[in-house]
Image (cartoon, rainbow, N blue to C red; front, side, top):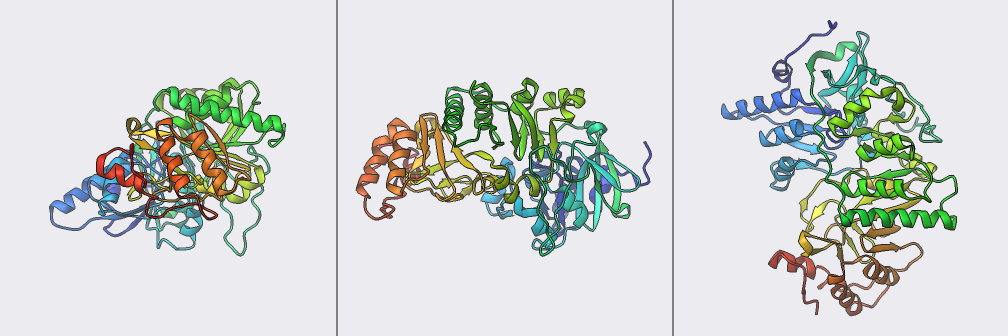
Length: 496
């Protein structure tokens, strides 16, 4: 196929990018992430470094990306700063070692901050597409993320035209960018299936420097099969939601579900799908993952909208083979729409997200290990948690073979305060924190959610600290964490 734009090799495209520039790249998870140009850019960075010249760029994406982007550039020491989220091992090491400056952001905030210039000028948009027309209409691939804003804000554009993705994806995207204050209007979404935008992103064709062709699947890894712990968490969440439905605290018409990403999220969705008292439901979420595709095929999920199709390559191929079945059941939007607090509150979403640790009062750490080392980032969990009809956090009650309790006296890093967290679920049970004061919350979380081997330690701390509205003993609040750092095991901590 011929284009009115230059056809470039990945190396030729990378040669346009200069040290110190800022790149807005496609991708929300590895879904739809730019792949070939970042790899070529990493090779160029290594060459520049070998010659004794500096070469680093800033990377802004929708969320995390694939290893060909975050991983390759991090290993080449080519990322000066990065936002708003990441999940790559090599990049995580670079961030925690101080080689890459990272700042964590709520994902719904990103696009407005880019348009407002808070992050500086976006020099290049490097965006994956499955089709592009002479008049500048771009059909995105398996994610939207923040790509529309990058395409509109950047000085210049490089398109990765990826033949792995079907051009028949046209129509699966609903591209809508709200006007910025003071001219913003209400976002007119009343149901998850409402379409309010356009199927393509339209840009000035003169901004497109060139097309780089590829044929590569998304670098989405598979999830581990459910185990007893994740299955029990999934069943506990489903039982709780079914109970809310029976009690009338969820309307009989039911409410849309938002689910995080990962093995626990898959198990939760499986639990919801299998529960006989939970009706077929809609999803209004960030990520549509493998389990959702199965639930759509079975009829348990009637409609799913998100900002990415984060599904394994073989599942995506089957999705493309059956596009017409999914055309009326799946829709991809920009992340500032999927995660928009106005829409989340209006639709009455039930949010289910995953915690690294939970303290006995319901504060949540989603991002840091032992309070210092970044794991991934806050992502969109805060966008949904603060505005959900019911906000649920899940985690296994222990980690590292039982050496770590995920239920602790005080979280080592706080991402979601007790004011936003309504329900905590582990494999052991459910703590419904609504209408409970801090003393009641502490007893409930310890009794219902903590691992039995840590129950006495946590209750000992609570009884020792029991004074004031929120009973804490500050010089003992992190004793379990300190014990782990000293011995590699939280068990048998002395709290007195």
